[in-house]
Image 1 (tube, rainbow, N blue to C red):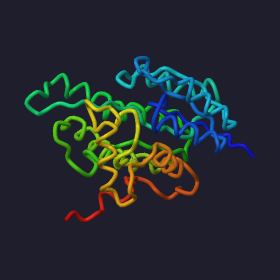
Image 2: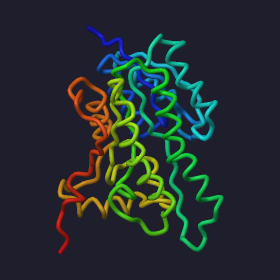
Image 3: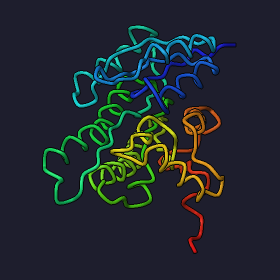
Length: 254
């Protein structure tokens, strides 16, 4: 029997968010595909993949920098499908900035998307969610595990996501709403393929050689973990941060 469950996913025009929408389609979970108006990636491609997999989804423009936009995004799940079960805070930005060039504006812009945007998504989702739902936020090994030079604002936001999720899990536990985080390692996404703000294709290729699995990860490998965390199989898992990195963070360095 197809699932009657409904999920909202921010940052679903590409990368992990797109892969998650496809995962949900195979599971019969209907999705609201969140896309930022300025994103160069096409959310219609996400919708096409969902429909090819036999799923149902709608596209909704959302700017996680404003409460009004995120609230309208979460509300779309109710108006379109009549319920909300899962909220996944995946939207994020990545900007390179040495500390001596890291202005207050750059700092605030980063945290407004990568940390406060997560708060807005979890808050709006939980407010509209029936008891027993699930929340997932996407962190990063940069901040979640490691430091990263010239990315202090990004790492600070991603570290903050972990504390946010733990506290939300405690607060919403009485409602049976679970809150967890995933900490992706080096994953081949449009963000990591950016040679200016991240590693770029060549940097990812070199880094993959140092991963026990022998390569960087795929968006689908992270999406499937999010799918697990928003499933009955994870019904007693909350307040946790699950690293998805092919063994990178546990490898002993010479």
